[in-house]
Image 1 (spheres, rainbow, N blue to C red):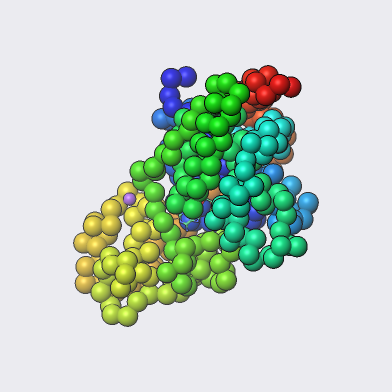
Image 2: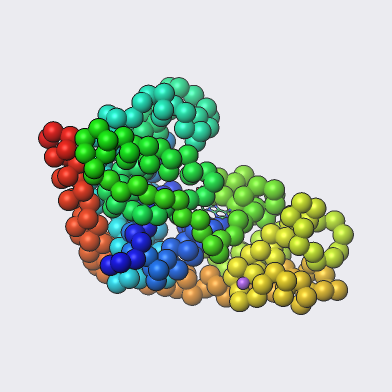
Length: 330
Ligand code: ADP
Ligand code: NA
């Protein structure tokens, strides 16, 4: 395969992905199957750093995999697997932890943010080491590219530093991955607070469209989205963040551009826009839900897909780990 290799992971931390996850990340996963040698991972080991419920985790891992298939990942065209099925991730992570400075890890902004919320006694060593496990995820596959949003840039820098350090200390082992700037990506904001991003940790469930929720509920959320003063439909992120967010979602879900939408809704009210967007959202999520349900109702098939994925992943990860072990003196 001559195509650039890409690695990306997503945590199984909710019962459903939300529209922001799809339009900001997963839609690109689907597209990159065509242009890249793509490795996609449900990172369940990252999902236990802050306390978790085992039954919920196991369910969410399966639901995540089923949704990824339903959204268009094709196990014939990408490698889709679950992190804990490939023991090399944890194994390489230990080696990398031993070449990471304590101060270096302490400077990770995401760790500082998350640990500040739980206090020192509520913070785990796993949360501290999280970016190092992430480095192992990427380096095991000799990835050329990693799609990253702003919040992950620092972690990718750490990954590159660790790869370089390992290579110069022990001998060339790891490819240096580059950030892959996604072309066609949309940042989606909370429907109730359009200055904050749509997130599973949002305070108001009315602000998030969960891909697996009742579509009638999604339609209602769109129709009661916070809009801005004035009546004109304009794209203006600063002064009209609510309407702009709806336009962004609408354009991302359809073949129309924002300019075409502005022309179409010229002189019409927010209500028309919301009604049509609600229809578009329902039209999108319904078949995704049907396919997700079908995958979940065929556990044998899902197990098989994930077992084959883990095997394909290990075919790359095991030789990388063996080389790293060899170089490090094991
Ligand atoms: P959440 O914010 O709900 O916890 P995650 O941090 O787990 O979501 O993000 C998973 C992926 O989805 C990441 O690639 C992230 O950039 C993307 N993503 C999450 N929320 C949004 C959003 N509101 N708009 C665009 N992309 C998003
Ligand atoms: Na579009």
